Length: 271
Image 1 (spheres, one colour):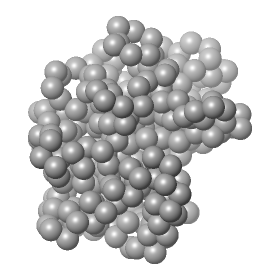
Image 2 (cartoon, rainbow, N blue to C red):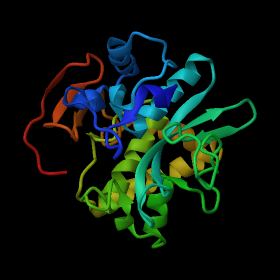
Image 3 (cartoon, rainbow, N blue to C red):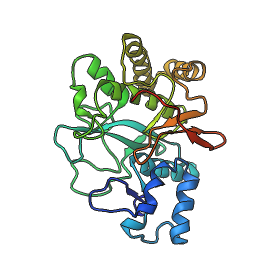
């Protein structure tokens, strides 16, 4: 159903109509579904042509899957990190997948890709913490980078773009924290302490948050509680209901997450 409703806006095999270019900024699932219904007025599992679907990205595939699971009473969440199974050998694409509780364990799934010639089951992927897993969380990648175990310049959006490297991974750690706290923002949103300048203080903060994220994921309740408290109290970490959206399809704008009102973004240094 998810893959029937959404087409990735950068899918090399699909050309979306120019009128659909802003789909990637829908943000909220109700807006995404309203857009789909305005074009099709049909059940979500009735086939849509690829170029008539809602344009989105990995975050939208996974968040729609998570929303459907939650609607059914299944605990579910998005996970933010990097995948090594797309397109370019040796490159780790920024990616979002879904994680849900099946009653016995957390199951990791990639709702974007579906069945295919993959070296793993996309509906039950190896856990991020397992050796050689195809998907790694931002916290794990940052920690490995700080230990000198990975090349940060192989992590990002695409090898042809400058959206990669140390600052990119570091900002995704903050994005992972936000998602864990229930703020499933867009991948191109920025707030708080996000910056393309990773000075020692910013690196140290990311070290602390990444360590807590990894500990919480391993079952450390105290780390989970500390993450929640730090997110609540620290303006560097919490968007406070307001983000700057550095949209890939237009000029930056500011979003009030409570009122959903947008306004032009003030001039700022390049991110």
